Structure formats: C-alpha cells, structure tokens
Image (cartoon, one colour):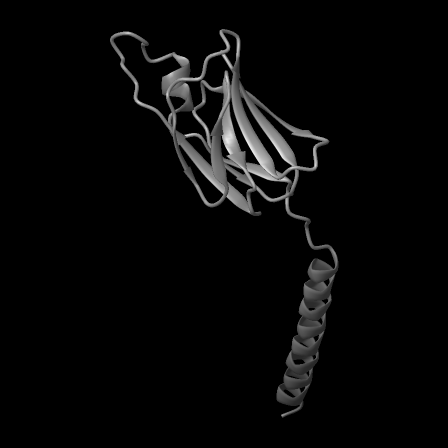
Length: 141
C-alpha cells in the first residue's frame, strides 16, 4: 500500500513538473517570434543566377532585368497585384500591394537556345516580396 501511494505521489509530481516545463517552453517560443523576411524566392532553377536588390525609392515597384546581353526573353508574368510596365530592357509592375507574389514563365525553343539558356533558367521563377519599396530582380547570364 505504501509503495502505491509513493508511486502515485511521484507520478503526480512528475506530471506537474512536465506541465510546468512545457508551459515555460511555449512562453519562450512566443517571446522570440521571427520577423518575416523582406523577400522569398519560392522557386528558382538551380542554374539561374540572380541578384535581388531593394532600392531607396518610395514607389511600390518591382523590376526584372537581365545583365550580360541585357535582353530579357519574352515573359509571361502571373502576379497578385500591380500594373505591368515595359521599358527598353526592363519589365515589371508598379503600384503593387504587399505581400506581392509573381511567377515568370517564358517559351523555350530548345533547338535554338538549349537547356542552359536564360529563358530555360528563368522559366518558373517565383518570388514573394513582403516589404514595401522599389525592388530589382537582376538575372545574370
């Protein structure tokens, strides 16, 4: 009988200690919440080289451009907000709302371009931007 009482007291105190430990752990997690990243690349081809830069502009804008030969392929853009613009060697969106998501697609002629071309590398690129500002995505070929 004494063994049962001692065992039940031990189990009861152990369960209280475990609950207190869980409570402490859950409190420590909430006090150290992570801040959302300014942007996330949701998909990118392993062969694609790019650089993402936030400029000091006050416009809510994202611009895509190519470095190297300077020409972007003909793109199909799927976006969550904003108005499309095309300049000489740039394309993008202005007046975007955040968070902003965009997916780039382009047709690839494998007989002309091959598998290691910029159009095949860009195809399917997807980005999410969480922080307002003027952004540039520079593809390097």
